[in-house]
Image (cartoon, rainbow over all chains, first blue to last red; front, side, top):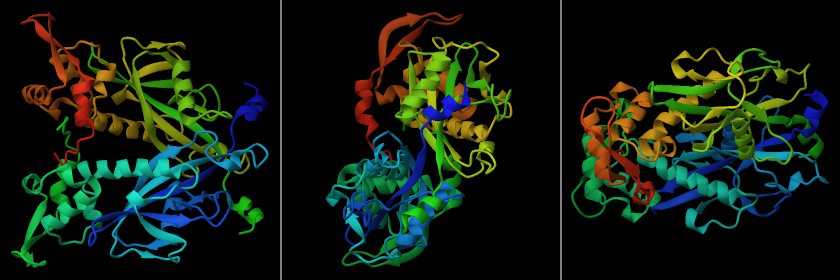
Amino acid sequence: MNPNNNQLILEDFKVGVDNVIFSIDSQKNRLLVLLVKRTEDPYINQWGLPGTLVRKGESLEAAAYRILSEKIEANNLYLEQLYTFGGPNRDPRESPDSYGVRYLSVSYFALVRFEEAKLITNHHQTTWYMIEKTPSLAFDHNVILDYGYQRLKSKLEYSPVAFDVLPELFTLNDLYQFYTTVLGENFADYSNFRTRLLKLGFLIDTEKKVSRGAGRPATLYRFDSEAFAPLKDKPFVFI
Amino acid sequence: MNPNNNQLILEDFKVGVDNVIFSIDSQKNRLLVLLVKRTEDPYINQWGLPGTLVRKGESLEAAAYRILSEKIEANNLYLEQLYTFGGPNRDPRESPDSYGVRYLSVSYFALVRFEEAKLITNHHQTTWYMIEKTPSLAFDHNVILDYGYQRLKSKLEYSPVAFDVLPELFTLNDLYQFYTTVLGENFADYSNFRTRLLKLGFLIDTEKKVSRGAGRPATLYRFDSEAFAPLKDKPFVFI
């Protein structure tokens, strides 16, 4: 193929990184997503996911961490790549009478510990939204958010991601509330949940107790990542 | 921020799509991956994953299907996005004395039915490789292939992707061989596998039998996607 023809038909891209950052307010049993108010066109003054365009020499993951560090301080967090949205016409800046380049978004999914996460910018610009109250977002960010929410739910089902953001010591009820907040009330009853998890052998009874309101003091557990390790790569066919 | 400064520090990208296309030769119990021999620099004459650069107006997924259709004819296939590899220096064409743009790869994962897939170009240019005999590939394609192989294994564990590429009617032993070819001999013993799958209720006994070599004729089953549907969104916590 003639390289000049080739160059003519290939698309030029800028690459954005957008983060779907979740947190769980365990006091209020709320699943939250971090949104920022846009201060520039397009979609000025509309809420959207925190994002940035990738700079020269910067890896995608470095850009994702850069967004996080500009918006919140968080020591305990989990981050992974989510999905790449790259269809034509997803960004108004693509119009031929604008810059004439396509904008692709590599989205990342993050989960941070709510109690420790400090918002850096002020509340009017950056805030936690309850997932069910999310407004109409800039670009295709509602689609990206939905995708992230699905990922969060499935991660909870087969990976120990919850323990990255729960306190080191927790009761089984804390863990159950965490799951219920994300997966809904009907995902499992408490007694089945308790039996299953204890049977898997990666929750260690610390022999410490804690009193919360009325009722008997509850046992505090911790997650044992070494005990989980052999489960990690074990295939569980359809179970 | 001054838009001119902004433009200076942002990276310019070309976006490639690379496909990890798997197939299972059930006659020989071999897991295969489709490789192509490069006919252009960089990495001329070296094997790599089939890929392309995204054209003006083309979606990422359309580019992934275009690669497939240029290399093989396949009616029964499964395709999904895998991961985006976008670190700096993954492509020799990025060097500043070349074009000065970055090359990002959005990878796709595909599974095709071996018996039906016809290679379009000749064997010296496009061929099925046994996964354990994969040579050193162009770019970071060995890393992408490894990532795809992990995805294939985990898809088999929690999704019905196997039924997209198995024949419509199959014996439980066919299905077990399919799983064993991908997951290795030790993933589960046949009797447990059989019991588990039948219990889940989405395999329908067609009351037809087939004879293969010695031994009693075996029952032919078909996959019932409606019976699977309720399982699809049911959370299975750590089981």
